[in-house]
Image (cartoon, rainbow, N blue to C red; front, side):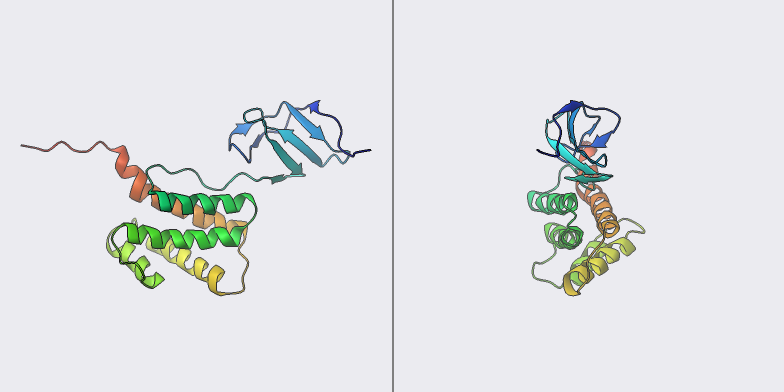
Length: 186
């Protein structure tokens, strides 16, 4: 006999679906004999989300979508976010570090430089907002720690770096495209 019961109508728990990232309240689910475990079906995408107390699998991704990002950089940002959905926080931190390199090269830095040179390039060319240099340095520092030391990153580390990476991507790529181009004056 299985420990999972038949599908039942459920209610009460609201969650962000780990598949479609929508905030939902389920209509149906599969309760487990242990009241701390359940599978809830997302009413938007019909996919299962597993809960054990408050741990959810797949977990909602950290960060938000960013518009107008070049494809390669968008892929890296999506990878960093996807890593957080499976608790791969060290990989997410390393991807955020790599995002900085790609932004610098996309904005004119020469490929093949040392990482610190990319950070300085972004800062010197005005791609880092005021008071943002410490954040870029934080990404560099945490990324180096994740990449070069025997250290495991935590969810909080990944959240910090993804949040700042998102802001930087919005500052450099998304926000400039929101304003219509100025018409030439005669």
